[in-house]
Picture 1 (cartoon, rainbow, N blue to C red):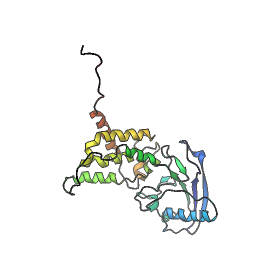
Picture 2 (cartoon, helix red, strand yellow):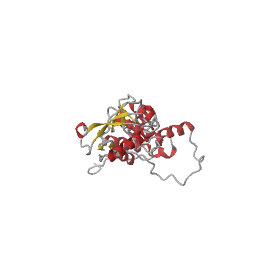
Picture 3 (cartoon, rainbow, N blue to C red):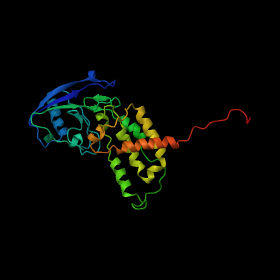
Picture 4 (cartoon, rainbow, N blue to C red):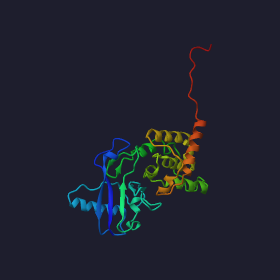
Length: 265
């Protein structure tokens, strides 16, 4: 098959939220593309051709290419990860496109994800959010047998659903506000439904929300674009749980201590 790729090329890091002037779309015609190629394998073929011509290859993120690591991720024809639901970019195959198609490929578009080069964005904002409290820091003792701590199946299923988040950032790229609430909600929900995570539930919700806001992510407007493009199909239920946990944490938060000035009189 033959395709025409319109790829965002950008040689320097973005310095502003509106980085339309930092790069441009460049068209490439690619022939003899196998329908069984993954989208990233197709980009590999393009880069081989560009390298042979002495041109700069297209920079893009990838690692495991098994839909697990969350490294890959581009906007394909306006949809993060492309047209197939529940599929990462590395698991998207060229048979999803018609012969002779024009395909538009862009990086994630979000102020919190500055473009580093071409299709590569800096997603370290997610790392900083996780470092703020998406973990269990209390001593939970020695490893337990699998059935030592009973966990209801419904809770285990909900925790597992949230834990499948790979942190790719598609939810942010799809949201018109560049909201990270599906990602943060997944982290909150993951620990909320496990006994080990409930010890720190109040401070976890406050810290994650505060870190998310500090990174410049937008607010949720409940239009569900994030769920629609999530390659792991994490439900928006986790956002509701995050909101509930945040409100709960503020209700049980201890007021700041006050010191008496002067004597007892």
